[in-house]
Length: 314
Image 1: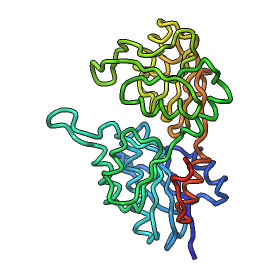
Image 2: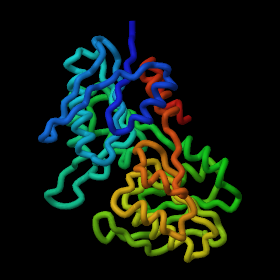
Image 3: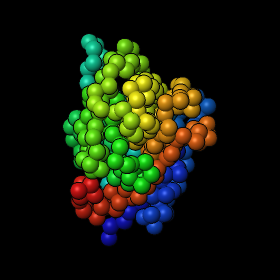
Image 4: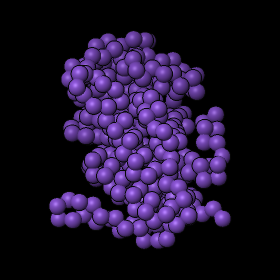
């Protein structure tokens, strides 16, 4: 008889608790400790022999610690004779390092894929991965699911009107923006930017009609928010009525929260809970967090029952 088990890492316990309640299954406790030198120790507190285990662990800050913790969790479950180890990574760390951008540089997203596979993962599920080709780095089943139904529902109910324009912050995000615009029958625009250094970009021009419009910038993640603030400022200077931002992954590293809070150009920032906010982030009224628990729980349920996951987005 098939048996499902849900295991949580330490990176996003609130999200995992919500998934547990929606699936009506108990979370298996994990005894995670750190030795004085920083080494991670893990012990699974319940028998998982023969079970189909789903491990939920986001790899946000601190990225390296969370990835190492996930690998140790997988190894613990493999040695405990789990039937399958399904790894659910709401935010896939290192996903921006998906190709050789310069000579003698790594493809770290592929390295993470190899580590997960060698550790013993049977399947990987993630959300809005930065680069689609990362799916090809795995020789095990891989599901990339989307937060767009959650985000579109919120935008339609709270922001959208006939004057709304969806804006891509760069050329690479146009396809994502087109999806939102198609669903809500809206126009699109694009920011022409130049990346001048790591984590630093400059908005150069606005392509599209945005004067007097309510603009919503769509991206997969917000890191330092430098690109976002540049884009919002450029849109306001071109006559945008309001500027909202919408992204799946709130990385919010470095000065991101200060930039968002102090920006006069940004009206609101809509994100999901793939990465938990810091206490400071929770105090910023501009930031609205939407839960991905429902869509992740449905993906887990369908995976366990060998049903289609892609049909969730049809």
